[in-house]
Image (cartoon, rainbow, N blue to C red; front, side):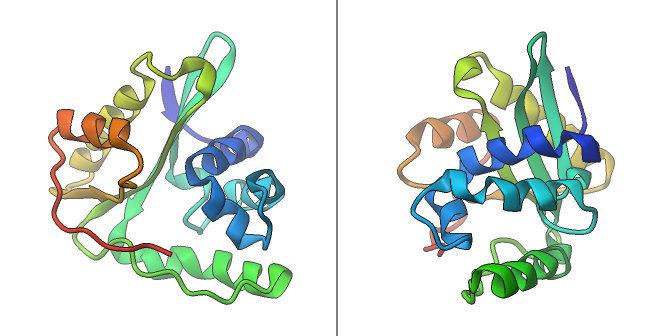
Amino acid sequence: MIKQAEPEDAAVIAPLIVLAMDSLAAKFVGSGDPEASLPLFEKFAALPGNQYSYENVLIYEDKEGVCGMISAYDGAKLEALRNPFLKYVASEYDFMEVPENETQAGEYYIDCVSVLPRTQGQGIGKELIKALLKHAGKAGYKKVGLLVSKENPRAEKLYASLGFHIVNEREFM
């Protein structure tokens, strides 16, 4: 079942964000271990008004609990959603890098898609993306975008199967 996340889902959202971000998540907390960033992402997943907030997350639950998530938001709101997080990691972890803009106005941006390893390959990611596309369409968005690592050909294939195509290539952090 796919549903809108709630603040109390933060503890299950955070590991899924870290799973998707991997070494990038660790970078925010000045660590080589992505797991070290779990408290950071749990904090922000529970708060409103930021890019990792439950407000921007749909979760997938099976009989064992939450096993997947997708987060997305209006690209025009990137700066406003990103600022609370960047201010916090600057003050608490001395992270001073300012990431490149990953989206822009006029685009609904998929920030993160993640499925627990125990349930990967069962179509959960595809169902989450379809639900997000439906949600974006109902909200009036005609364009949905995302970034995909070149080192993740499975994800590229999945997105292509859902109608996504490469618009450009760029380095990110």
